[in-house]
Image (cartoon, rainbow, N blue to C red; front, side, top):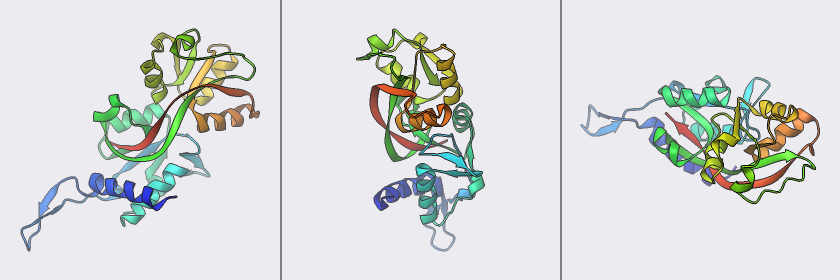
Length: 230
């Protein structure tokens, strides 16, 4: 993990977590930060390997490692039980509505900008369109995508990114998780599904037991992932 990446996250976390307000030093009269400990925070994430996932009851992954390292560097280590792995829709709505809640890893979209305070970037990733191997579907843009039924995880950034490039919202079929997307593919409810490249490949192989069951037929622009603070 690059030290510069930890330092960048660290600086933002100090501003977001340890200095939410000001008090006055009794000896000097100077303002000092009104500190809030990391123990007051709840961290929510989803199963999105290799960035964040649960293994043997413990949250792990690139984003988890970076978060733990930054808070350790601040002298405010995070307890493992502060990180909950939940369905994305639940985690996102909770982070929107409850104080001291942090959600990760999430794409920083313009429509989300004012809903959170942001720390990052963690890493860059890209959303892609998956089809069954050998489906012979060629996609050059939104006009082609609108011919198909596309599965998305409810609340995932894929929905906004697809609509941004001109995909009709009525062409999108939301479900709770990637397992639901693959099930809808198998039951011929959808023709394609959109998800993060690396994580989508991981789920595809884990669920179908075949690394070549799906193939990427279209790639959206890359976006950075962040920690988002209520």
